[in-house]
Image (cartoon, one colour):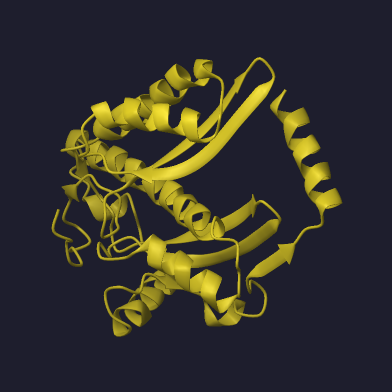
Length: 240
């Protein structure tokens, strides 16, 4: 799909995650007979559904998981794709809107915390490129961190896009004839941030407010084996 340029704030667009590639964030968390499998990645919604079963078989084989994991993995992916596709073709409002993206995740021994603004009207933005630059700038060597950051960004953008569909529905049924932009107002600060982003070109969608540069600078910690074990034990306890 050809990337769309900046859209007028009061004009609805067809549902999609506001990025250059309309990829679906997929998250798996499956436990069978005391063995747990977790993963997160992106999926092209235009790929044939048959690829889901192929991916599930390959994952089970490569990771030496019990064969019983194959069906739940395939079903979970298919369920998330079906939900995403249920919004396709529907009108979506983004408005002239800036949203706050927050990162708070652990990948292996790396703990990341950060927050920044993201321009929803930039349909040429690239979470994967942002993640690669983030890891390069902060000298993060674990190759699994970048994809995890990109998925986390896409998950939040997906949630906002779904809210944009709801706003478009409300606009259509409103008897008062309210305009779509009223459902997604942009603050003066948000408009200023948008103007700054446009100065840097269409591929730049993330921005830190100047007054927050010191307060919300990225935090990256490398955890010891003991700290990782403690966190995993806590996560397992919460999961139960």
